[in-house]
Length: 430
Image 1 (cartoon, rainbow, N blue to C red):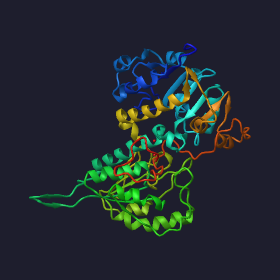
Image 2 (image 1 turned 120 degrees about the horizontal axis):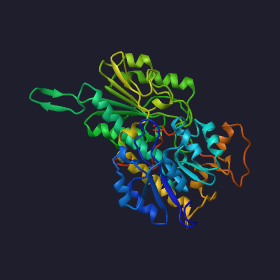
Image 3 (image 1 turned 45 degrees about the vertical axis):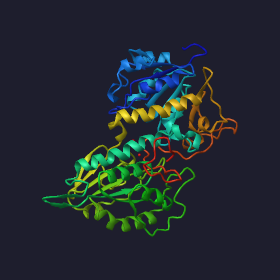
Image 4 (image 1 turned 60 degrees about the horizontal axis):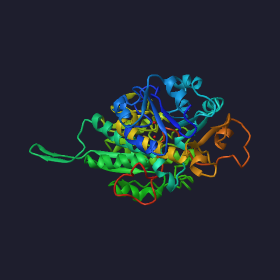
């Protein structure tokens, strides 16, 4: 255990298959150490993301040989994926946790409530980064937005690498090459970043979102907003996420999108509903109507996919169209994805830890809304309901907040449209 007035933060190696990110990077360690926290890092924890042990040591971290040592030394464990979002490989961590310890990271509580219940039995306090409230003070802790930024960028790069065309218009001695056409479905952080990246590569870009309010954001990053005459009612929840629509509306939406999809070379889908399967927006019939060689990148693949033909973590070719179903694109850009996530985590730690102690202040919305378990109990109301548990008393019950799973890539953008895609700190699909 760390000294009573000095908390120790542990950074273990991520165990989820293919997860190359790390929860803290060397550059952010000084901000965490400044208020009196010590950092211990499992050897090799940052190597896959390009951060060597020597870089951590240079910033004052202690390098420990084993995972067991890190868990034993730390008061607070920070991860990209806790056991909740890593139920297979992360199961071994349950034996390493001890009562009173704090666990911070993506936890997938809306899809794996049973896993959160199992974590509660360890009597640890678990904070889910994906439940960060969408308030101004929490913008720099918004890990969903930071990772969505990376996902939106990489989706376009992935599409460009698969498309048998170049994106920009070029006038050459051999003639004029027409620009590729890109259609982005979902104008959250990932969607806006995808639009901006495709535009920088020279593509003609169209975008659609069920929330008409995002039209200005779409236009601000250089795309045409596709307007479908649908009576969707209130399409946005209190947290800025798209709400689930009636099946009748979805059918009408698909019919009207068929023409738009057929006219584009690349379709990038980012539409996700917190805690629910992704809506199917691109049908097999639409795919059949696309030109051979066209590409679809489905960023909602982890939740079933927005395309009917998507297979998670596979690349399939149907009707001559290449369909990518990546479930963890941020991990394919681990250096910057880790750097951005590390900033989110470090800022949260400064809110959580005061005067050398963990301060679980239930009057602080950031603490209250991200807290999943405490003293052996699941305390988040939405998770308790999904487990069939009774409501807790108001004194200890966290506020009900909209939330999204680790794979969420379509939270709403900020109210004021930026000239460039939103930065990681701005409020906005692994």
